[in-house]
Length: 268
Image (cartoon, rainbow, N blue to C red; front, side, top):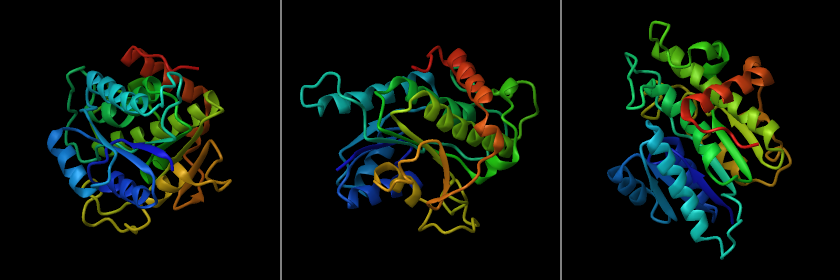
């Protein structure tokens, strides 16, 4: 049995991955933005071990989610204060590409950047180190640049589709950065396909039944391929990511900018 934490998992692919993992006998901790969504998640997955509640559009909310997740591990640590983190953390939380304007958070950040890029960074930095990290990217990330000089969209005219695609490139960069920095943690990224979730929309053409399986496989499989750190996946097959995602200098710049924005440096 593995313990898995899935962010943004009160519905959609996060919930589906949780349901699959729970059906396999694993201990699943979900995450919801608020109490109502948490109740919905418990109803959808009655055997859930816990639901962490917090709005990761703010830095304070990100800190609270990290603290709750670590508190759960601490409570199940069998009196071992130095216990490691979850067996796997699936960074699924995201908002989609339909924001018609730049929405500003309480921290003065672009809403989409805060949830899609900064939250995975800050949760990774703050939580106990897991055995495996899985970051959800998107096929849209192949067609953009990282634009690290304007992460917050203060210099460009807002384009929700481009902002979303850039954030998903950042997620792949985070995965590969952590594979370099934490060699004892298996860190992977994947694209689930364009499927008909609330984010993807009803016209999405890809196979819904496959969209959640790769992240679940990466979280628990003992297959040698699933345990290969620094890989990018689509439906359990290796796929070449956007070349920028593999550039160590760009990865390090992203980490530095996220540290500057959040006030939290990624541990080595």
